[in-house]
Picture 1 (tube, rainbow, N blue to C red):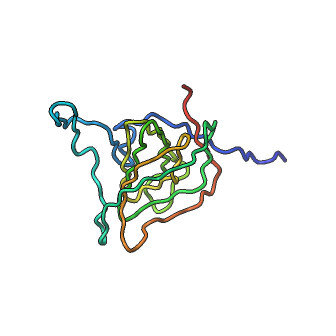
Picture 2 (cartoon, one colour; picture 1 turned 135 degrees about the vertical axis):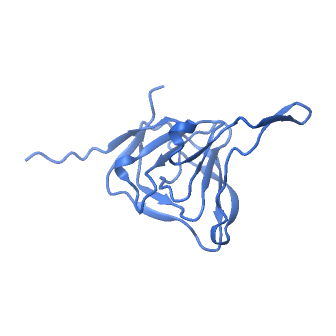
Picture 3 (tube, rainbow, N blue to C red; picture 1 turned 90 degrees about the vertical axis):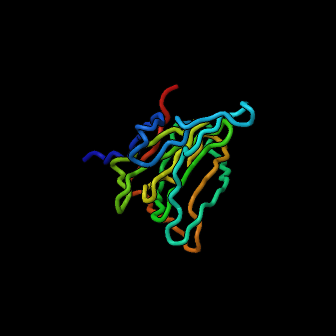
Length: 173
């Protein structure tokens, strides 16, 4: 009898657009509502994200996550998914940093058969809708990532370890 195939499933990360990300939340990027400020030296883009953090006395918390990264990994192994039922969560890589948004639906448990991965490029960010299962932060190299999330007395983070092996690969350059 042949040995079962134990190779991890490979998810190819895709480009992040408003359309490809709509099922999970909102792309944060300059949009159509813009105007000049600061005597014409700056373009201001309003309402690039909608936060949902007020549930059960929550408030917006702005944090910086500093990661060690995995260097230029050929593949990024996945281990768990988490969700926040009471608030949205935004991820915005700073400077030239890049990160991955790895998502698995919004049901009662992560849908490991429907994992999607997106590369968040410099100048972009995402806001995940509340309840969307996502892998803990993965960055492409060491990075600083601005995170806006719900803060409250009660922690709102449910974590589920993966039942299958999977990894994310970046598209060929």
